[in-house]
Image (cartoon, rainbow, N blue to C red; front, top):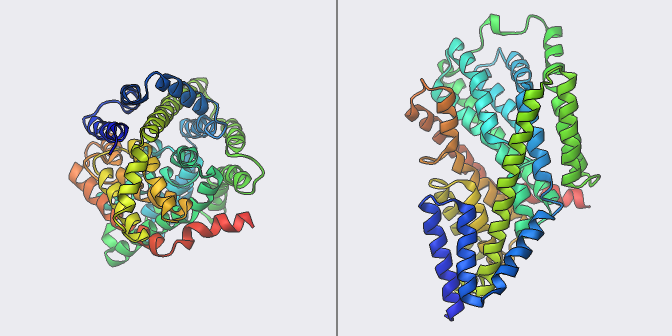
Amino acid sequence: MSYTEMLGILSLLILLISIFSGFPITFTFMFIGLVMGYLGFGKVVFHLMNIQFYQVMTDPVLGAIPFFLFMGFILERAGLMDGLFTSLQKLMAPIPGSLYVAIIITATIFAAATGIVGSSITLLCFMAGPAMARSGYDRVLGAGAIAAGGTLGILIPPSIMLVIMGPLIGVPVTNLFAAAIIPGLLLSGSYLAYALIRCFINPKLGPPLPMEMRAQSVGQLVVDLLKGAFPLLMLIMATLGAILAGLATPTEAAACGSVGAFLLVLAYRKFNVENLKRAMFNTAKLSAMILVMIAACNFYGSVFARLGGATWTSNTLLSMNFPPMVMVLIILTVVFLLGWAMEWVPIVLVLMPLTMPIIKNLGIDPLWYAVMFAVTLQTSWLTPPVALSCYFIKGCQPDWPLWDIYKGMLQFVCCQLLVIALLFFVPEFITWLPEFLLK
Protein backbone atom coordinates (compact mmCIF):
# COMPACT_ATOMS: atom_id res chain seq x y z
CA MET A 1 0.00 0.00 0.00
CA SER A 2 1.41 3.40 -1.03
CA TYR A 3 1.56 6.54 1.12
CA THR A 4 -1.40 8.19 -0.64
CA GLU A 5 -3.50 5.00 -0.41
CA MET A 6 -2.78 4.89 3.33
CA LEU A 7 -3.98 8.50 3.59
CA GLY A 8 -7.16 7.58 1.70
CA ILE A 9 -8.01 4.62 3.95
CA LEU A 10 -7.14 6.66 7.06
CA SER A 11 -9.45 9.44 5.87
CA LEU A 12 -12.30 6.93 5.51
CA LEU A 13 -11.76 5.58 9.03
CA ILE A 14 -11.65 9.09 10.50
CA LEU A 15 -14.81 9.96 8.55
CA LEU A 16 -16.76 7.00 9.91
CA ILE A 17 -15.61 7.68 13.49
CA SER A 18 -16.55 11.36 13.15
CA ILE A 19 -20.02 10.58 11.80
CA PHE A 20 -20.73 8.08 14.57
CA SER A 21 -19.47 10.65 17.09
CA GLY A 22 -22.14 13.11 15.98
CA PHE A 23 -20.05 15.69 14.11
CA PRO A 24 -21.96 17.61 11.39
CA ILE A 25 -21.52 15.56 8.24
CA THR A 26 -21.02 18.46 5.82
CA PHE A 27 -18.13 20.04 7.70
CA THR A 28 -16.66 16.60 8.40
CA PHE A 29 -16.50 15.85 4.66
CA MET A 30 -14.92 19.22 3.92
CA PHE A 31 -12.37 19.21 6.76
CA ILE A 32 -11.14 15.64 6.21
CA GLY A 33 -11.02 16.18 2.44
CA LEU A 34 -8.98 19.37 2.80
CA VAL A 35 -6.50 17.97 5.35
CA MET A 36 -5.92 14.59 3.70
CA GLY A 37 -5.90 16.09 0.22
CA TYR A 38 -3.32 18.69 1.20
CA LEU A 39 -1.13 16.01 2.76
CA GLY A 40 -1.51 13.83 -0.33
CA PHE A 41 -1.19 16.20 -3.27
CA GLY A 42 -0.76 19.74 -1.94
CA LYS A 43 -2.50 22.94 -2.99
CA VAL A 44 -4.36 21.23 -5.84
CA VAL A 45 -6.94 20.19 -3.24
CA PHE A 46 -8.27 23.77 -3.06
CA HIS A 47 -8.87 23.85 -6.82
CA LEU A 48 -10.53 20.44 -6.56
CA MET A 49 -12.89 21.74 -3.88
CA ASN A 50 -13.79 24.77 -6.00
CA ILE A 51 -14.54 22.59 -9.05
CA GLN A 52 -16.69 20.10 -7.12
CA PHE A 53 -18.80 22.79 -5.46
CA TYR A 54 -19.27 24.61 -8.77
CA GLN A 55 -20.36 21.41 -10.54
CA VAL A 56 -22.99 20.62 -7.89
CA MET A 57 -24.38 24.16 -7.79
CA THR A 58 -24.73 24.25 -11.60
CA ASP A 59 -26.11 20.72 -12.03
CA PRO A 60 -29.58 21.10 -13.64
CA VAL A 61 -30.76 17.73 -12.28
CA LEU A 62 -30.24 18.81 -8.67
CA GLY A 63 -32.38 21.85 -9.43
CA ALA A 64 -35.36 19.53 -9.02
CA ILE A 65 -34.75 19.33 -5.26
CA PRO A 66 -36.05 22.81 -4.27
CA PHE A 67 -39.06 22.48 -6.61
CA PHE A 68 -40.10 19.08 -5.22
CA LEU A 69 -39.58 20.37 -1.67
CA PHE A 70 -41.69 23.46 -2.32
CA MET A 71 -44.41 21.28 -3.85
CA GLY A 72 -44.46 19.13 -0.74
CA PHE A 73 -44.33 21.97 1.78
CA ILE A 74 -47.10 23.97 0.15
CA LEU A 75 -49.40 20.91 -0.05
CA GLU A 76 -48.63 20.11 3.57
CA ARG A 77 -49.32 23.65 4.81
CA ALA A 78 -52.60 23.82 2.87
CA GLY A 79 -54.05 20.79 4.67
CA LEU A 80 -55.07 18.95 1.47
CA MET A 81 -54.16 15.63 3.08
CA ASP A 82 -57.13 15.96 5.46
CA GLY A 83 -59.69 15.67 2.67
CA LEU A 84 -57.84 12.74 1.12
CA PHE A 85 -57.73 10.81 4.40
CA THR A 86 -61.37 11.54 5.27
CA SER A 87 -62.67 10.42 1.88
CA LEU A 88 -60.64 7.19 1.95
CA GLN A 89 -61.72 6.54 5.53
CA LYS A 90 -65.40 6.75 4.51
CA LEU A 91 -64.82 4.57 1.44
CA MET A 92 -63.22 1.77 3.51
CA ALA A 93 -65.45 2.16 6.58
CA PRO A 94 -67.28 -1.23 6.41
CA ILE A 95 -64.02 -3.22 6.16
CA PRO A 96 -62.23 -4.54 9.30
CA GLY A 97 -58.98 -2.62 9.57
CA SER A 98 -60.37 0.19 7.40
CA LEU A 99 -58.47 2.92 9.24
CA TYR A 100 -55.16 1.14 8.66
CA VAL A 101 -56.05 0.87 4.96
CA ALA A 102 -56.92 4.57 4.80
CA ILE A 103 -53.65 5.46 6.58
CA ILE A 104 -51.46 3.44 4.22
CA ILE A 105 -53.22 4.48 0.98
CA THR A 106 -53.19 8.15 2.05
CA ALA A 107 -49.50 7.87 2.91
CA THR A 108 -48.76 6.24 -0.47
CA ILE A 109 -50.53 8.98 -2.43
CA PHE A 110 -49.00 11.75 -0.35
CA ALA A 111 -45.55 10.18 -0.71
CA ALA A 112 -45.90 10.62 -4.45
CA ALA A 113 -46.94 14.24 -3.94
CA THR A 114 -44.34 15.36 -1.42
CA GLY A 115 -41.56 12.89 -0.59
CA ILE A 116 -41.22 14.54 2.85
CA VAL A 117 -41.33 11.75 5.45
CA GLY A 118 -41.58 13.89 8.59
CA SER A 119 -44.53 15.89 7.28
CA SER A 120 -46.44 12.77 6.19
CA ILE A 121 -46.01 11.01 9.54
CA THR A 122 -46.94 14.11 11.53
CA LEU A 123 -50.11 14.74 9.51
CA LEU A 124 -51.13 11.07 9.64
CA CYS A 125 -50.74 11.09 13.43
CA PHE A 126 -52.95 14.14 13.87
CA MET A 127 -55.61 12.80 11.49
CA ALA A 128 -55.64 9.10 12.37
CA GLY A 129 -54.88 9.26 16.11
CA PRO A 130 -58.30 10.58 17.25
CA ALA A 131 -60.17 8.34 14.77
CA MET A 132 -58.31 5.27 16.05
CA ALA A 133 -59.12 6.15 19.66
CA ARG A 134 -62.84 6.62 18.89
CA SER A 135 -63.05 3.35 16.95
CA GLY A 136 -61.12 1.14 19.41
CA TYR A 137 -58.18 0.45 17.09
CA ASP A 138 -54.95 -1.08 18.34
CA ARG A 139 -52.37 1.68 18.78
CA VAL A 140 -49.40 -0.71 18.31
CA LEU A 141 -50.56 -1.73 14.84
CA GLY A 142 -51.69 1.84 14.17
CA ALA A 143 -48.28 3.28 15.07
CA GLY A 144 -46.63 0.74 12.78
CA ALA A 145 -48.97 1.60 9.89
CA ILE A 146 -48.36 5.34 10.31
CA ALA A 147 -44.58 4.92 10.51
CA ALA A 148 -44.34 2.46 7.62
CA GLY A 149 -46.71 4.39 5.37
CA GLY A 150 -45.01 7.68 6.13
CA THR A 151 -41.57 6.36 5.19
CA LEU A 152 -42.72 5.55 1.64
CA GLY A 153 -41.90 9.16 0.80
CA ILE A 154 -38.20 8.32 0.88
CA LEU A 155 -38.63 5.82 -2.00
CA ILE A 156 -41.72 6.56 -4.09
CA PRO A 157 -40.97 9.24 -6.72
CA PRO A 158 -40.45 12.15 -6.49
CA SER A 159 -38.02 10.88 -3.84
CA ILE A 160 -35.35 13.39 -2.80
CA MET A 161 -33.04 10.46 -2.03
CA LEU A 162 -33.28 9.23 -5.63
CA VAL A 163 -32.63 12.75 -6.97
CA ILE A 164 -29.46 12.82 -4.83
CA MET A 165 -28.43 9.31 -5.89
CA GLY A 166 -28.69 9.93 -9.63
CA PRO A 167 -25.76 12.33 -10.16
CA LEU A 168 -23.83 10.62 -7.37
CA ILE A 169 -23.68 7.27 -9.20
CA GLY A 170 -24.14 8.36 -12.81
CA VAL A 171 -27.62 6.88 -13.31
CA PRO A 172 -30.37 9.08 -14.85
CA VAL A 173 -32.90 10.23 -12.24
CA THR A 174 -35.70 9.41 -14.71
CA ASN A 175 -34.61 5.75 -14.73
CA LEU A 176 -34.38 5.69 -10.94
CA PHE A 177 -37.90 7.09 -10.65
CA ALA A 178 -39.26 4.47 -13.04
CA ALA A 179 -37.39 1.65 -11.28
CA ALA A 180 -38.64 2.67 -7.82
CA ILE A 181 -42.37 2.77 -8.63
CA ILE A 182 -43.10 -0.98 -8.53
CA PRO A 183 -40.96 -1.61 -5.39
CA GLY A 184 -42.75 1.30 -3.69
CA LEU A 185 -46.16 -0.14 -4.57
CA LEU A 186 -45.04 -3.61 -3.45
CA LEU A 187 -44.06 -2.16 -0.06
CA SER A 188 -47.38 -0.34 0.23
CA GLY A 189 -49.24 -3.50 -0.78
CA SER A 190 -47.33 -5.61 1.76
CA TYR A 191 -48.27 -3.15 4.53
CA LEU A 192 -51.92 -3.29 3.48
CA ALA A 193 -51.92 -7.08 3.30
CA TYR A 194 -50.30 -7.42 6.72
CA ALA A 195 -52.77 -5.04 8.40
CA LEU A 196 -55.80 -6.68 6.78
CA ILE A 197 -54.63 -10.22 7.61
CA ARG A 198 -54.04 -9.24 11.24
CA CYS A 199 -57.54 -7.72 11.45
CA PHE A 200 -59.09 -10.76 9.73
CA ILE A 201 -57.47 -13.06 12.30
CA ASN A 202 -58.28 -10.76 15.21
CA PRO A 203 -61.10 -8.27 14.37
CA LYS A 204 -60.63 -6.52 17.72
CA LEU A 205 -57.43 -4.96 16.36
CA GLY A 206 -59.44 -2.95 13.82
CA PRO A 207 -63.23 -3.24 13.80
CA PRO A 208 -65.38 -1.68 11.04
CA LEU A 209 -65.99 2.02 11.67
CA PRO A 210 -69.18 3.09 13.49
CA MET A 211 -72.06 4.50 11.43
CA GLU A 212 -71.40 8.11 12.44
CA MET A 213 -67.95 7.90 10.76
CA ARG A 214 -69.33 6.61 7.46
CA ALA A 215 -70.64 8.44 4.39
CA GLN A 216 -74.35 9.25 4.53
CA SER A 217 -74.92 8.23 0.91
CA VAL A 218 -73.13 6.87 -2.14
CA GLY A 219 -73.45 10.25 -3.82
CA GLN A 220 -71.83 12.01 -0.91
CA LEU A 221 -69.02 9.44 -0.90
CA VAL A 222 -68.36 10.04 -4.62
CA VAL A 223 -68.29 13.82 -4.07
CA ASP A 224 -65.87 13.45 -1.14
CA LEU A 225 -63.56 11.24 -3.21
CA LEU A 226 -63.61 13.64 -6.16
CA LYS A 227 -62.84 16.59 -3.91
CA GLY A 228 -60.34 14.84 -1.63
CA ALA A 229 -58.40 12.50 -3.92
CA PHE A 230 -58.93 13.30 -7.60
CA PRO A 231 -57.11 16.68 -7.88
CA LEU A 232 -54.10 15.43 -5.92
CA LEU A 233 -53.89 12.26 -8.03
CA MET A 234 -54.08 14.34 -11.22
CA LEU A 235 -51.21 16.54 -10.01
CA ILE A 236 -49.07 13.48 -9.20
CA MET A 237 -49.85 11.77 -12.51
CA ALA A 238 -49.10 14.93 -14.48
CA THR A 239 -45.78 15.51 -12.72
CA LEU A 240 -44.47 11.94 -12.75
CA GLY A 241 -46.09 11.14 -16.09
CA ALA A 242 -44.24 13.99 -17.78
CA ILE A 243 -40.94 12.68 -16.39
CA LEU A 244 -41.51 9.01 -17.24
CA ALA A 245 -42.89 9.79 -20.70
CA GLY A 246 -39.82 11.84 -21.52
CA LEU A 247 -41.87 15.02 -22.02
CA ALA A 248 -39.93 16.92 -19.38
CA THR A 249 -36.76 16.60 -17.34
CA PRO A 250 -37.18 16.00 -13.59
CA THR A 251 -36.36 19.66 -12.94
CA GLU A 252 -38.88 20.95 -15.49
CA ALA A 253 -41.60 18.60 -14.23
CA ALA A 254 -40.83 19.55 -10.61
CA ALA A 255 -41.18 23.24 -11.48
CA CYS A 256 -44.54 22.59 -13.17
CA GLY A 257 -45.60 20.43 -10.21
CA SER A 258 -44.83 23.18 -7.72
CA VAL A 259 -46.89 25.65 -9.80
CA GLY A 260 -49.68 23.05 -10.00
CA ALA A 261 -49.59 22.59 -6.23
CA PHE A 262 -49.85 26.36 -5.74
CA LEU A 263 -52.85 26.54 -8.12
CA LEU A 264 -54.45 23.60 -6.30
CA VAL A 265 -54.12 25.46 -3.01
CA LEU A 266 -55.77 28.52 -4.60
CA ALA A 267 -58.59 26.38 -6.03
CA TYR A 268 -59.29 24.85 -2.62
CA ARG A 269 -59.28 28.35 -1.07
CA LYS A 270 -56.51 27.29 1.28
CA PHE A 271 -54.13 30.08 0.32
CA ASN A 272 -52.49 31.84 3.22
CA VAL A 273 -49.61 34.32 2.96
CA GLU A 274 -48.05 33.07 6.20
CA ASN A 275 -48.16 29.46 4.98
CA LEU A 276 -46.57 30.49 1.67
CA LYS A 277 -43.76 32.32 3.47
CA ARG A 278 -43.18 29.33 5.74
CA ALA A 279 -43.12 26.92 2.77
CA MET A 280 -40.62 29.13 0.91
CA PHE A 281 -38.42 29.50 3.99
CA ASN A 282 -38.38 25.74 4.66
CA THR A 283 -37.65 25.04 0.99
CA ALA A 284 -34.70 27.44 0.91
CA LYS A 285 -33.28 26.14 4.19
CA LEU A 286 -33.56 22.44 3.36
CA SER A 287 -32.39 22.88 -0.25
CA ALA A 288 -29.28 24.74 0.87
CA MET A 289 -28.49 22.08 3.46
CA ILE A 290 -28.90 19.21 0.98
CA LEU A 291 -26.94 20.83 -1.86
CA VAL A 292 -24.00 21.87 0.32
CA MET A 293 -23.95 18.38 1.79
CA ILE A 294 -23.84 16.82 -1.69
CA ALA A 295 -21.06 19.21 -2.76
CA ALA A 296 -19.02 18.39 0.35
CA CYS A 297 -19.52 14.66 -0.25
CA ASN A 298 -18.46 14.95 -3.89
CA PHE A 299 -15.38 16.87 -2.83
CA TYR A 300 -14.39 14.23 -0.29
CA GLY A 301 -15.10 11.48 -2.82
CA SER A 302 -12.84 13.09 -5.40
CA VAL A 303 -10.05 13.43 -2.82
CA PHE A 304 -10.52 9.82 -1.73
CA ALA A 305 -10.37 8.64 -5.36
CA ARG A 306 -7.31 10.80 -6.20
CA LEU A 307 -5.47 9.39 -3.17
CA GLY A 308 -6.12 5.89 -4.53
CA GLY A 309 -8.39 4.83 -1.67
CA ALA A 310 -11.31 3.90 -3.94
CA THR A 311 -9.14 1.74 -6.20
CA TRP A 312 -7.46 -0.01 -3.26
CA THR A 313 -10.80 -0.71 -1.54
CA SER A 314 -12.37 -2.00 -4.74
CA ASN A 315 -9.43 -4.26 -5.59
CA THR A 316 -9.28 -5.62 -2.02
CA LEU A 317 -12.95 -6.56 -1.97
CA LEU A 318 -12.84 -8.02 -5.48
CA SER A 319 -9.80 -10.14 -4.54
CA MET A 320 -11.96 -11.99 -1.99
CA ASN A 321 -13.63 -13.70 -4.97
CA PHE A 322 -17.14 -13.67 -3.55
CA PRO A 323 -19.88 -14.42 -6.11
CA PRO A 324 -21.45 -11.14 -7.31
CA MET A 325 -24.81 -11.63 -5.58
CA VAL A 326 -23.11 -12.64 -2.33
CA MET A 327 -21.13 -9.38 -2.47
CA VAL A 328 -24.37 -7.43 -3.00
CA LEU A 329 -25.95 -9.27 -0.08
CA ILE A 330 -22.99 -8.38 2.16
CA ILE A 331 -23.24 -4.69 1.18
CA LEU A 332 -27.02 -4.59 1.75
CA THR A 333 -26.58 -6.23 5.15
CA VAL A 334 -24.08 -3.51 6.08
CA VAL A 335 -26.56 -0.86 4.87
CA PHE A 336 -29.36 -2.44 6.93
CA LEU A 337 -27.22 -2.59 10.08
CA LEU A 338 -25.94 0.98 9.64
CA GLY A 339 -29.56 2.10 9.31
CA TRP A 340 -30.12 1.13 12.96
CA ALA A 341 -27.59 3.72 14.12
CA MET A 342 -27.43 6.38 11.38
CA GLU A 343 -29.70 8.49 9.20
CA TRP A 344 -29.94 7.72 5.48
CA VAL A 345 -28.02 10.81 4.31
CA PRO A 346 -24.50 9.83 5.49
CA ILE A 347 -25.06 6.21 4.47
CA VAL A 348 -25.93 7.25 0.90
CA LEU A 349 -23.18 9.84 0.63
CA VAL A 350 -20.45 7.56 1.99
CA LEU A 351 -21.34 4.02 0.93
CA MET A 352 -22.93 4.60 -2.47
CA PRO A 353 -19.87 6.17 -4.19
CA LEU A 354 -17.59 3.71 -2.35
CA THR A 355 -19.44 0.58 -3.50
CA MET A 356 -20.48 1.61 -7.00
CA PRO A 357 -17.06 0.80 -8.62
CA ILE A 358 -17.25 -2.69 -7.08
CA ILE A 359 -20.77 -3.19 -8.43
CA LYS A 360 -19.72 -2.13 -11.95
CA ASN A 361 -16.65 -4.38 -11.87
CA LEU A 362 -18.86 -7.32 -10.89
CA GLY A 363 -21.12 -6.66 -13.90
CA ILE A 364 -24.20 -5.91 -11.79
CA ASP A 365 -26.84 -3.50 -13.11
CA PRO A 366 -26.23 -0.18 -11.27
CA LEU A 367 -29.93 0.73 -11.56
CA TRP A 368 -31.07 -2.48 -9.84
CA TYR A 369 -28.40 -2.05 -7.16
CA ALA A 370 -29.32 1.59 -6.49
CA VAL A 371 -32.99 0.75 -5.93
CA MET A 372 -32.09 -2.25 -3.73
CA PHE A 373 -29.84 0.09 -1.74
CA ALA A 374 -32.70 2.61 -1.40
CA VAL A 375 -35.31 0.05 -0.35
CA THR A 376 -32.94 -1.44 2.24
CA LEU A 377 -32.06 2.01 3.51
CA GLN A 378 -35.73 2.85 4.04
CA THR A 379 -35.62 0.61 7.12
CA SER A 380 -33.41 3.23 8.83
CA TRP A 381 -36.61 5.18 9.52
CA LEU A 382 -38.16 2.18 11.29
CA THR A 383 -35.28 0.61 13.22
CA PRO A 384 -34.23 1.85 16.69
CA PRO A 385 -32.36 3.58 18.20
CA VAL A 386 -32.35 6.31 15.49
CA ALA A 387 -35.79 5.43 13.94
CA LEU A 388 -36.81 9.01 13.25
CA SER A 389 -40.38 7.90 12.51
CA CYS A 390 -40.73 6.89 16.14
CA TYR A 391 -39.88 10.35 17.43
CA PHE A 392 -42.25 12.06 14.99
CA ILE A 393 -45.06 9.82 16.26
CA LYS A 394 -44.10 10.28 19.91
CA GLY A 395 -44.08 14.04 19.47
CA CYS A 396 -47.60 13.99 18.01
CA GLN A 397 -49.00 11.32 20.37
CA PRO A 398 -47.14 11.76 23.69
CA ASP A 399 -49.52 9.36 25.49
CA TRP A 400 -48.44 6.43 23.27
CA PRO A 401 -45.67 4.46 25.05
CA LEU A 402 -42.37 4.41 23.17
CA TRP A 403 -42.20 0.63 23.36
CA ASP A 404 -45.64 0.31 21.72
CA ILE A 405 -44.43 2.47 18.83
CA TYR A 406 -41.26 0.38 18.47
CA LYS A 407 -43.27 -2.86 18.47
CA GLY A 408 -45.55 -1.53 15.76
CA MET A 409 -42.67 -0.38 13.56
CA LEU A 410 -40.69 -3.62 13.87
CA GLN A 411 -43.69 -5.61 12.59
CA PHE A 412 -43.60 -3.63 9.35
CA VAL A 413 -39.81 -3.98 9.10
CA CYS A 414 -40.51 -7.70 8.65
CA CYS A 415 -42.83 -6.84 5.73
CA GLN A 416 -40.09 -4.71 4.25
CA LEU A 417 -37.48 -7.47 4.53
CA LEU A 418 -39.82 -9.83 2.68
CA VAL A 419 -40.15 -7.28 -0.15
CA ILE A 420 -36.35 -6.83 -0.24
CA ALA A 421 -35.97 -10.61 -0.59
CA LEU A 422 -38.54 -10.62 -3.40
CA LEU A 423 -36.71 -7.83 -5.25
CA PHE A 424 -33.39 -9.61 -4.73
CA PHE A 425 -34.55 -12.87 -6.28
CA VAL A 426 -36.84 -11.32 -8.92
CA PRO A 427 -34.92 -8.25 -10.19
CA GLU A 428 -37.49 -7.73 -12.98
CA PHE A 429 -39.71 -5.94 -10.44
CA ILE A 430 -37.09 -3.16 -10.57
CA THR A 431 -35.81 -3.34 -14.14
CA TRP A 432 -39.00 -4.03 -16.13
CA LEU A 433 -40.60 -0.56 -16.08
CA PRO A 434 -37.44 1.40 -17.06
CA GLU A 435 -36.78 -1.09 -19.89
CA PHE A 436 -40.41 -0.84 -21.04
CA LEU A 437 -40.33 2.96 -21.10
CA LEU A 438 -37.06 3.00 -23.05
CA LYS A 439 -38.47 0.84 -25.87
